[in-house]
Length: 186
Length: 186
Image 1 (tube, each protein chain N blue to C red):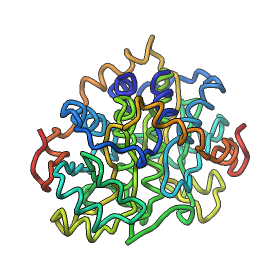
Image 2 (cartoon, rainbow over the protein chains, first blue to last red):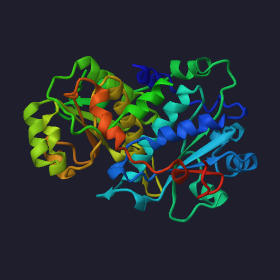
Image 3 (cartoon, each protein chain N blue to C red):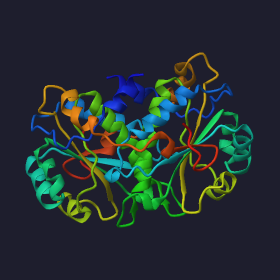
Image 4 (tube, rainbow over the protein chains, first blue to last red):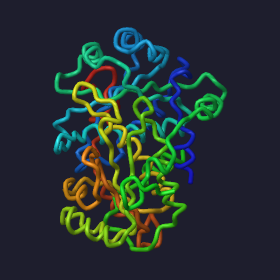
C-alpha cells in the first residue's frame, strides 16, 4: 500500500520552495519514473526540459509565468513537460500527447514526493514566452511545468500539512459511476 | 522509495486477466487514488465509468474494442476515463481534460499495481461504439480504458515478469534535456 500513501501525501507546494540544490541522483530518479510511464502505442512522446540555470529560471519566472506563479523563480530546478504532437496518437480531435504527458508527469510528481521534494504542476505561464526564452523548436508544445525543490520545512509532511488539510476534492459518487452514466458508485 | 518501486513494477497486463471478482474495497481504493490527483485549477474534470455488468463487458469487448484488445471481455471490471472537455482548461488548441485524465489514470494504475491487480491503459476501441453501448451523453469524450483484474498467476510479480523484462523505453538522454532543447541530461 505504499504507493497509495504517496498518492495521498502528494500536495501542490509552490509555497514551499527553498533554493537548496537538488541531488543529481534524485533528479535522475524522478525523470526515470516519468520515463517508466505507459504511453499510447508506447510512442513515448513526452520530453522534459530541465532548467537548472539560475539566470534562466529567474528570467522565466519574471517574463513567462503569471504573477501567482512567479515564486518558481526560487526553485533550483524548473521542469517543463513538452511534446511534439506528431509523436503521439491523435484521434477525432483528441491529441493523446496531452494524456501521455499526464501519465508521465504524475509518475514524476509521486517519485519526487517519495524523495521528500516539493512539486506543483502548473500551466500558469505564457507558452509563447516559455518557447522564446528556452528557444524551443516551433513544433514543440509546452504541456505543463513544475518546480522541483526541497521544502524549507523540517520535513515533507510539515510542508504539505496545511495543503493536505485544506484539500478539496469532489466526492467519489460524483466522479465514479457504476455501469450507468451518472449512477454513483458509492 | 516505495512509490518508485511501484512505478517500476507496473506493467500493461491485458494478457493476465482472470475473471475472479474484485473486492469492492480495492475498487474504491483505486478510484480514490485517481480522485487525489491534481488537475488544472483543481477542476477535476475526469469521470470514471466502472463497468462490472458481465453482459455489458462482453458486449463492449466484442462490439467496441479492437480484436487485439478483445481480451478485456475476460475482466470482471472495465473502467473508462471520460470527461466533458468544457469542465477543463483549453488553451491555444490544448485541451487539458486529456492531461488531467492522464494524471488521474496514472494514480489509478499505480494504486491497482500496489494491490496486485492487473491493468492496461488502452485506447484501442471505437469511441462511438463505447458511447452507444454505455449511453454516454453526447458531450462526453472517452479518453482511455483499462481492465481491472486479478492476474491468474500466483503473484503480480510473476504476471508482470515477462512484460517488464521486455519493456522498451527511450534512453534518459533522449527524453530529458538540460537547460537547452536537445542537450541530453545524462
